[in-house]
Length: 388
Image (tube, rainbow, N blue to C red; front, top):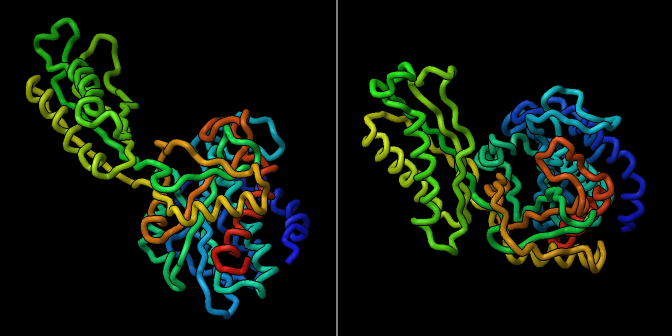
């Protein structure tokens, strides 16, 4: 198997695919053009393309007819609602949308891996499932995809994913066992008071004043209900109310997010938040509406497969091409639902130490990392199968 030569040959095509996807970003659940491009690219291979489980997912299975493990490789394909400010030939052609989280690069890496594994299919021992997942951002469609059975038929034995990450040297792979990313909850609070003229505040129930008290009191939840070593945070990110400088509004809206690594901690958030809101509104004569959703659960890596990822990176990419991730990220990731169902590992791949961060209007996946991403996916597939 001369995998390096295959990657050398396909890399220009993979790079062009990455840039084509970058120029045509699509939001969660609407990745129709992206899915079409993926299907067209894989149509000439021996990979069986399955009927979509949702609508814009693309799942392909490569089987060699031999008994063995089924390895799942996943890439997310959606973009973010941001306006790109890069001045590059392949910049986003859709106003207000861009691939600011590197999903174009993830998709290209998985396409390249599929091309390579298709060429060496006779060497495989088992099967490979290529999962191009829609709606990772906000919609967390990974949960829906897993519930729809994407890890079944054939049953997946191990699953892997890569995510572009700044502050790492280009092409370096990084990971940690256990909780590597946090759960992410989202809350919305409507405080309903009594509006009126600003010159007669005594006739009003001012939701702005009440909202300020709620925001301040919410900040004590983590510091006074959880221990200093419990990894958790709560942030109010939206405070919306009023339209005029001389009118006390009828209502205001607060929205924010919670993050945690341990569900025993995070499960307490909804009640604690509502207790704060209820108490302050009761004391002030206001009413409220409260919503809490938890679309992302903690991402828990399997220690065995993190060790395997480390061995693959150091043996096939270079002795200095692995980093142990020291701290868990408080960011959320719906690959968590894949790992809840199946053992595996979610790792980062370096974009460069001075590269713009993800979710930034200047982020652009570093094409120099594509080779290592493809090599990593191919070799960890072969390693998990026992071929190497």
